[in-house]
Length: 284
Image 1 (cartoon, rainbow, N blue to C red):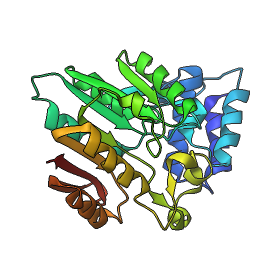
Image 2 (cartoon, rainbow, N blue to C red):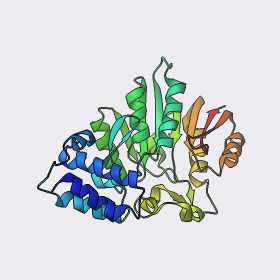
Image 3 (cartoon, helix red, strand yellow):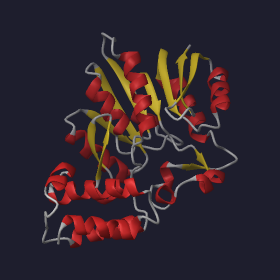
């Protein structure tokens, strides 16, 4: 079957669900992934045909069910690096790239060695991007999910970086795992979507990505932030830096949390969508 014919099938099936440009994007991503046929090559050779088209039609069925394209092909890109992803980890997002860029801009002139801890690492995207770009950093990454850590470890190998992965629950961690460890930087993108905000989320996220990494109860939205700040008081060096990705509606609450716990130089930043998304503080 000609790929152009398959593209028409994609539009007939998906145009009622997705924007037409997005459907084209899906089709070209899958064509390149399964058949190594680029968009340019297909434009030049409109009669290009493939014998095995069941694979791409299976992907079409997944898209029809609003399964994320990243999970279908099993990979994505973050901060210019390749990452494997599956249903055990969140799909890395552009706003998290902004958080990474902020951290790198703060640390790129650092001359001495320093230790970084990424809490709730998931796919490992933050820890790995930092390890790749900050050569003097010793990077640690913590997650409660063993399945997520398997993905993260694979991604560290894929990107040829050394990250020490730790399996523990920041809400109930064992002291021995952090014995003799004190960090210069702690960063986290923890669960922060309140249950009441589920109705605002797209179905492809709500029905596919791990709820363990997304949601908190309405009556305790700062659950993980409180735990990480308490952990930082014990395990972050004086003058150490604390970075968070946050719920856009809780910026003021986060400023108060850091102030109450003796952090200074607090800065709240917006993402590219003009939403309060990142916060930084220095431990006194």
